[in-house]
Image (tube, rainbow, N blue to C red; front, top):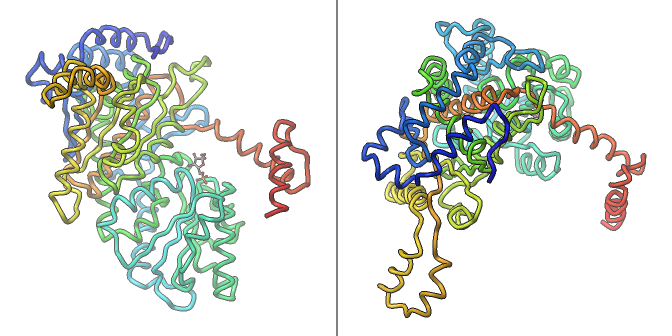
Length: 539
Ligand code: F6P
């Protein structure tokens, strides 16, 4: 892989070149205290960078690079609510959503008022004070949203299942594929259903179409359009549009423009969770994220978990040129974490232009992954033996909160073993010796041994969570949010806009009439459109 040629990132390329002279196993052999020196902990979250190709000099050099790029000043501006989202001329203040008044973040009063309103509504649904139009308790929540209006709530709902009221059934629909909304509504009692329409812009086609379908379903079953309206709430930064759509003013929960969609989980976007989670769990998650905020804001760069994670990931991608990064949560309930991080990181950092008017420095790696141990039976073959080096983030709750603790221990054993195997590999000599000890003849050894070699020396990070609970989940998600922001600041890009998603939406607007026979398709797509129309005739 080739390192980024961008002069801004030259220090990373230089460090990578220097570090290439030593294997990760050598770095361990050189220093018996390596694990202690390359792990950092905060409130039950441990960041283990010891299996990354790092040494003490690299940490010094990377921290100096960050300081030289003005990260500390940027961090101050970030928390002060300055317009770090420079292209859209607004702050990025998702931390304010989980702050306490004493933290001194802007908009504390507005946030407190909105949080109280959300809590009161959630409590009213949970207690039965807020009921459906026919007096039934609301037991089904249908959460409609996409991207940041979906991924965070969906992830948290799955991750914190053990902290949710089993009496409250939350379903999600995001895609405009009718299968999503059809599955979400299937079997629900409309009299006991609350539809939560989540859209920061309140202009996203998928969400509005899903909302129309859900509202029609309610009206059909309740046989009263106005009654249907009492089963719908909207979460948006555009209450005007929600009211135009027909949502009652007192059923709209707002959030501000200075909350980016992929950073909005902590706002009213999480209302479905506030209803579903047991008392105190939502606040505990916000408090966990707040603990990471305070740490990020105050800790020196060389002891700062988001900064250290960002610098390690930057070194791998921009220094060593590793083009992808795998996220492997060793917890089925964190199965949606890779998808959440795909939007968080790739929509934040997959940028073309730099804030200085030139091109963005470097390119963000493709983020992907699946839970372990499933991943071991799907793509770890390539991670172990493929030519591309793919750094892995292993995320492992030590206590999963499940029955059968022996299985949990076996899960953890697999997680640790995978990071060890990636680092140590298995040499041809090792394989030959193993096969000889097993009695294989020389011809068979010569034939097979090369195929069993694992190059090793492959980097990974392990993040341990004491347990999978609201506070640790908040810490973890805030860690990645701030790591993402640090990477953007150091690369000189705007982490908080997403102009790249506009073109496809615009083109879809032109393709739809062509598919309906009401307009001409782009010549390059005309054949596809014709084939689709033909197939639809036959359908
Ligand atoms: O993918 C583009 C995007 O604007 C995301 O940034 C956002 O989370 C998603 O679409 C949904 O947007 P909205 O919440 O406005 O419906």
